Structures are given as structure tokens and as C-alpha cells.
Image 1 (tube, one colour):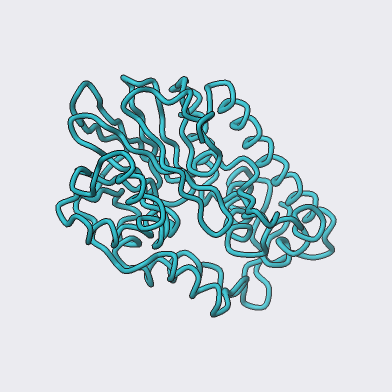
Image 2 (cartoon, helix red, strand yellow):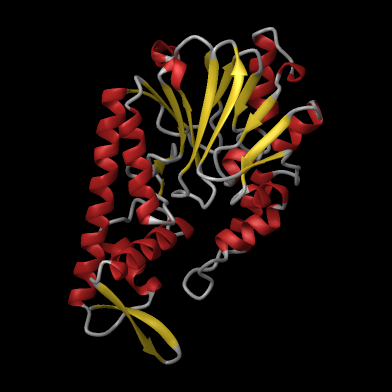
Length: 321
């Protein structure tokens, strides 16, 4: 991590918190108030956050606020343990995701059971998600709207932008005075690989929002771009990964269009995903992410007049228009 600290401005620190073979970075903003960005999974506080605080002469009592970038278990899973370590911490999350953080079964049901007629998680998958999510824990302050500014003192303000691309309530945190942005999982690139080489497919639930979010990061043009799973980036590195993110998205669209053009009949989402996975994406887990993103892409292509829905045996299938 030492090489990544080079571009971090004063007042912003990183906590390296890998889990389950996946990389994960959390961030600490130190103004007059101290703000932790994300809490990882259930085990993250004991394994990473609390030891980091102790090493740096701090305790949970020194943390005033925790801001969660979005409602996925690897970002809010440590909330309960941080809450019990200091119940006075103000927990903040966007209005479109916060209920998932307070009710983890609701999170699982509404996210992972979105496409049960196309893909259904087995019991082991559900157990892993629920275990990583930890115990239900309250959100103190619900962030509303598209833009919110928080003053944490000592010349530091956080502008929170709602993007809603990777999850409905996803946010970006822009610290203008430090020329720095914390992007969470906004820059998806080619997904995330774990140590075993199995990938999680790039996830965005709304293509227009994803395009807007990537363009917002480019527009802010920060010298330091802090991601959750892709390291701490320079402006140039971030712009390159944004370019790769757009390229992956467009190639995925081309594969969908080509698959439907060659099909002899309209296809269900799971049939499209199976075809794409077998031809192009075998390195990725055949799970929620590839189904959700492919569905979002199909909806986007339908809005562009390229695809259409066709009724068949009581269900709507996908076809070239």
C-alpha cells in the first residue's frame, strides 16, 4: 500500500481491507470531524479498521461520521460492529439504498432475487451474502437528492453526488479542497478478480446513470481518484480506466446485439447470458451481476430502438427490433 499513498493528499488516509480474496480499500477523512468511508464486510472492523485505528493512536470514539458509498454487503457489512464500538457515530447513506443497510434480508431479497425466473442463488450463496452483511444496523442520517455538501472542518468539505449506477443509491464523494474524489465502485472497468482468478462481472443497474457517473468523474478531473477495488489512481490512470469501462460496456452491447441477430427466435435473459458467458465471459462467475448488467443493457438498447420485447408463452423475451 505504501506506493499508493503517494498521491493521497494530507487529511485523507487509506485502510487496506481485503476480504475473501478480493481487494478493498476504505478511506478516512480527517478534518475537524473524522469521517470513515465504508465499513467493508462483517469481519472488516475487527480484522482491519480497529487495528488500523490502534496503530495510529486512535479509537472508534475518534470517528464522528461513517458514510456508506452504496448498499452492497462489502461496503456496509461492518456497520454493526462499528456501531457497537461507538454508538455515537453518525451513519450516513443515500435514501435509495439505506433500507438495505438496515435490513439485510431485504437487501438480499430485493437485489439477488430480482431475476428469479432467470437465475436463482442457492442456499450457500445466500448464506455468504447474509454472513458478509453482518447484523442489521441503523442509518442515522439519510442523504437525499442529487447533491449534498457536508463541512467537516479544517477547510474540508465533502460534496456528495448521487449517481445510482452500480446500485440505486450509489454516491460519489468529492473533496474539492484536496482535489480528490472517492468513487466507491463507480468505475467498473472489467469487474473485479479475486485471488483465484474468478471474476465478478461489471455491475451497473442503469446504463444512462453509469455513463453519467463516469463522465462526472472525468468532469471533476481530480488529481487523486480513490476507488474501492481498483486502487488509488492518478488523474491519468483514472481516465484510462474510464475509457476501458466505456469500451467494455460498448463491447458487451455489441455481443448482445450480435447474439440476438444470430438467434432463430426471441431469447430470454438467461439464454442471452448463457450464450454470452460461454463465448466471451467464462472468466466471470455466472451469478447476479452478469444477469443484472445484461438486463440493464437490454433495457438501454430497447430505449435506443435497437431491441424490442416479444411476448411468448406468457413471458416477454428479447429480440432485435
